[in-house]
Image 1 (cartoon, helix red, strand yellow):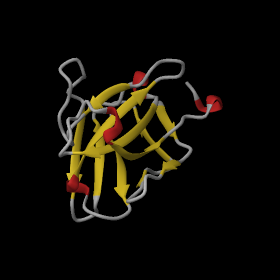
Image 2 (cartoon, rainbow, N blue to C red; image 1 turned 180 degrees about the vertical axis):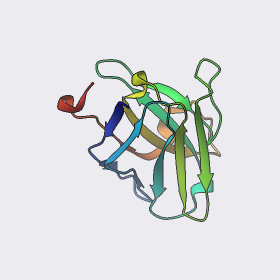
Image 3 (spheres, rainbow, N blue to C red; image 1 turned 45 degrees about the horizontal axis):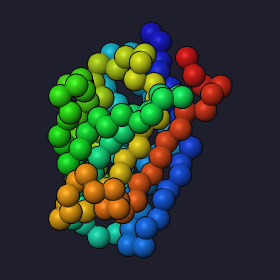
Length: 136
């Protein structure tokens, strides 16, 4: 069975009050389920909304989850988001893993008291990259 590597280089962006951290790598077999966590360093994960983005090499990022667990209508229902207050983290889960799911995924947090489309509402995020030598 083919495996889809999702190898990541961690880049944590700070913005004063907290950071978001993702693992360096996540991998899974075709048709399996993977979960990518995004841990908040301080404060309450519930104080801000979390969004998730998918970015294929050479293409702009696509929003796959917004407002913690909401999915844009054009995004497959294989993608879901959740918040776990006990671990102060958010997670992106991808079910029935497909070859096209190999990409960069990053989480972003923004203030839930500010219009979600307001660009300066971003507090921080962490980005994941797939090294070119690992591309399928």
